[in-house]
Structure formats: C-alpha cells, structure tokens
Length: 373
Image (tube, helix red, strand yellow):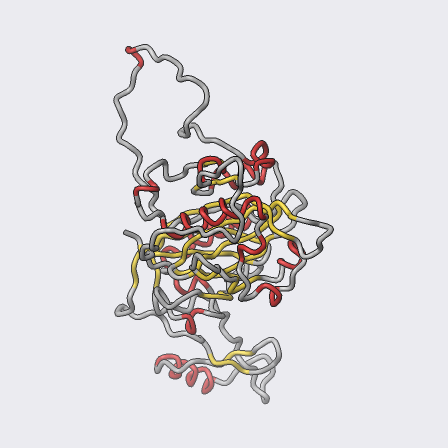
C-alpha cells in the first residue's frame, strides 16, 4: 500500500499539503488529521537529526527520484514506528513522492535499480535494503589487471541529469549510500534532540518542474492533480487525458512506457503498489489536443422507411461536416454531448521536449516533467 504526498518546501516545518487515502492503512491517520502538520513530527526521535539533514540535502541539491528507508510513527501507539520507504522529488516549490511499507525482496531490488539514490536511515534495515552497484566504492580490494588488458581511462561520470550539479552532488548520479554517509557528526555521549538548533545554509533556487497524479486505472490516464502552471495550465489539465498533452506522433511510445510502469507497480500478491521509477523524453503540447478517439454516430433511421435514411439527410450531414459543424453524439446516460470536446492543436501552439519521470503507486501514477536541456 502506497500513499502519495506533497510537502511544502521549507526546513522548519515541511508541512503535509496533500495525502492520498492510503495513509489510513499505512499509518492509521486520516488525511485531514495530518494536513498542515509538520511531516518531520512522524519521524523516530533517534533518526530525526539525520532525516532533517537528508531533507535539507534533498532540497539544496534539487534531487529527484530518490528513496530513503526510515521509521514513521503509527497513530496506534501499540504499533509504534513502522519501517517505510519514502520517495522524494523536488518539484519547484514543493516536495512530492510516496510513502509505502518497506518489505525486502524482489520489489526492494527493483526500486534500488531504478532510483537515483537510496539512503538507509534505520540501521536495522541496512542488511535488507543496502544495495550497492558496481560503480560504488567496494570494501573489497581491487583485483590487479594485467597491463595488456588495461582499458583506456574513461571520462569522469557527469552529474545526474535530474540533479542540480552542486559540489555536494559530485559523486555518481545514481549513488546508493548508507545512513553513515548522510548523517551529520554526532557525539557518542549525546544524541541531539528535536529541540537542538539545526541550522543550514540558505536554500538555492529550484529548477522548473511540474508534478502530475494520473488515474492509473483508466486507459486515458486522466489527470487528477497538477502541481503548478509552469508547463501547462492547471485548470486546463485537470480532468483531461494525460495524452492530450503528448505529441500525436509520440503517443504510442509514451503509452507503452506507462503500461510498463503500471506493470512494475504490482506487489507479490497482485495488488497495486509502488514500482520504482521510469525515465523518458517526449514532446509536450502546452495547449493539449483531443487524444481520445471518438466513434462516429450511426445514421438515424427514418421514421417513414425502416432500415434506410433519406438522401436529403445524408446530403445535409455532408454539408454540415464540410462546413465544420460538430455532430452531437449520445452519452451513456442518454444525453447529447457535442464533440470533440477539445479542438485540435494548431501549428502555432507551443510545444517542446520534456524529460519525464514515471512511477506507479497504489493510489495513482505520478509523472514529473521538466524542460529538456
């Protein structure tokens, strides 16, 4: 079970701004009980200093598609603190992501393979979730390579295409680190409490990104939520198909990506769950188009001749179509709806390449977009 969230982009409070309904099954709270409350209040006291440092680093380095394992407080005091996997992406002026139960196994391996970075805060969870890639520093000594087999030196890895490129992010862009690498220095005699002053440098400006939450159970991936107006208009986007904003020539490939990500977002029991991250690039149409195929209305039989239509009606329809008049169609409830709802995109409409991150969750699909560089 995965709940989607949105936090304000501040260091002192980081209040919950949005929570999906699954938070009830996850932590026992109704969404309204947590809205406008500091998200860090749910963190285990022993992990609070490291989580706050991690929260600062996430914002300062403009990170995206990163994952942390930590303990969060359940509403039922008898259940204590629950080990959770929390994904995070900075989206302009908010932090968006998901919270789900942390369970070892194939799903955790898949998440580690697709996330930009993994951090394990809870020490007892390191053995199950501390995965390392071959590019990460290894505790084993390097094997000697004969000079005859040595390869030419490769260029140094570039910073993550979704990171800010700051000095703190100069290591591998898909680095996986443990809590020891992320936590500030703490004296063994005394662990800082929540009341201790934790100060940080001023936050840098963030890149322009927009987050969408889509209906994962619909063919057209209806947009349920849009975080800002930076790329498309919020009022224009909500309740429309996500593919309305994808260039027609690229719709098929984007649909295949989303279908693939939906398949990842299923747990071992066949239930919707979190499924890691997928990365892609496509052309965004800022005004949108009508991507939903509409079936032509069948001809209306004449009242005077069964099984046929009058020639006059047929000619009238042809003239109507040539003049650009929309033909009404029936709705499932028997009403009439004029279509298409949205006019086709004109050549003058703005369109540009965007980078995209796709992730599937039990409460929906999350898509993060930014202008491609």
